[in-house]
Image (cartoon, rainbow, N blue to C red; front, side, top):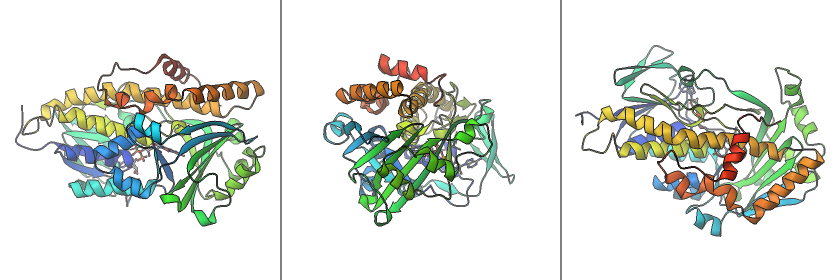
Length: 426
Ligand code: FAD
């Protein structure tokens, strides 16, 4: 049954996921407020890879052209052995790839992507509030109330909890904590003139070393260069509380080729990002509160899919509610419960697969024993022969358009994902 008033949606968290959700709900005609804890909206000034499953969402929202204007479309993703320099795999991500997945692979400055979605949300009429730290939500009947630390309350038909890896609102649903992987990331995005060593400016290059890897790619039409170094911390393995120091960074790459060692000078040293994920959870909904983005499915970044999956979440919620809550002339707020259940049923299995596969993918990169490297090289050679066997499940139109929770990928991917259940990168 339709109601006379609009549907009210409160989004908690103004990262890429929260902004995408706010824009998506506004596009359907909801009255949307987004609250963010930080005094200003923003993102880390480093790079972000966007695969076609995410760039299709941006295109659906009319934002892809703006992203392409400031981003780079790499020619290849290249994997190299960091200790020998040998090329393991060169995957063309233009041409046939872009045709197959009906969208480009793009690398973009995080600040740029965040600003493009923020501007679109503001322009669409989303109310954006800073300095609001939500401490909890409660559902009474068919309304949700979010309470902020300063005592303010916000009432809505639905709360979308996009409050990230350390989500407070997830704690109302799941009794779990972020799991440290023992790996830490250092990042740096510098003007290209200041860069000490750069690999091919047209490619994303991933160097794989023992318990470490390094990623390089251009940003902002090649004016900037992005470097990410990820390695296992010996201090973490020793059980120490503080881990991932700069000394450990230098030591982790000691056996690597000179190009990789030189690239370490392109990293910021003031900050590092210890890497965490969580195990998949089947339930994302608590009354009228639903998780989205990292709060629902934080993952290790080896598949470069965290933000991509958050965009998929928002787009699926938009499509499901367009057919239910927003199908009539007036909003049917009673339809939210069914819509959230369907969103949960569609998204949880897919993102669980990405979380699990990311763990295994990362572990296959960081091997050091000769037999492991042999198997890794054979895996990459096999992938090179038929790369789509490994990417269709993640990037294809069929994979993201299905609003059928039963739709699954190939047996090979299911086997890989299953290993990620109990196998930590190490
Ligand atoms: P966040 O960005 O964490 O946003 C959460 C927001 O909520 C924050 O603004 C926070 O201040 C706010 N907040 C938190 N608690 C509260 C509260 N109680 N009340 C109000 N506000 C609150 N993904 C990709 O797709 N491609 C990549 O190439 C890629 N590379 C990565 C590389 C690294 C090294 C890392 C660490 C991650 C990478 N990711 C990548 C993952 C991606 O960054 C994340 O998945 C994505 O940014 C998550 O967005 P989010 O909006 O869900 O969460």
